[in-house]
Image (tube, rainbow, N blue to C red; front, side, top):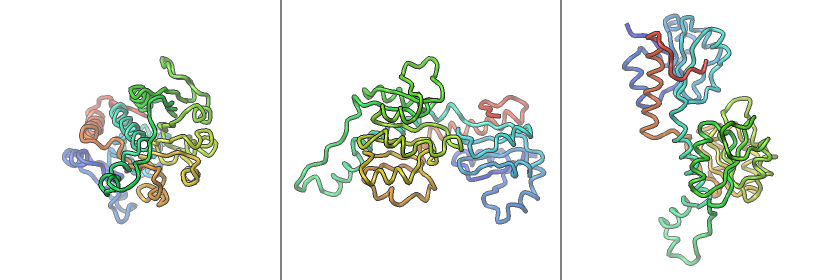
Length: 313
């Protein structure tokens, strides 16, 4: 008989199809009565497949007495109660090591588009403005600018490498200086922003980083500064950022993630100095296939009595 899993949210293709081929999958996110579904299938469920906002809290873990593993389709685990999983001896695994390059590409793409105004340039040509009186407004060069990487983890390192290829200087802030890194370290986010032309936000989400990029950080970045967010919407004080953009106290923003997504603040849509992306930093055929393979591999390895590849707990 197939092992039974609980899916907390829809998993992107091809992972969804792969999961359903190998396991009996119960879709908690579609259940009209979650308590009834958990009472019915909970005693048989041995694993959870999770993704993005489909979190796993302590109550859900407690409702699954045979739960052995939570296999997460992503690298951020802030929506999973790791303490509750650890207390129950439940393995938690993610896909760290597969998404960093793709997300870094997204950060650079956002940087290019907001600073060089490429999206506006496309509209300028398509709508016939090119043939009208006047000229295309000047943009901002990347070369010679300083990128401040807030969170020099796997993604941050890849961002830094790409930024250097564009002739940019790199600084960073982590809680502690990272060994084996030659980039200058700043002791706090405000100092990093003050020393940077572009602030790339690449820290993990969760309570520890909520509102980390606040008014003080944005003030330090200044009216010629740009902020790029490939982390989580919660990391930036979004109302303050929008106010600064409206008032010209920031030059622009490139956002792959926002608060309350996908129902984002409509003021962001109205700003020509903002480039928006639908949290698609990992959304390439190649990366999503690799993520699907890893999520399935972690499940298969665990149920075969083998160690998982990316164990968090």
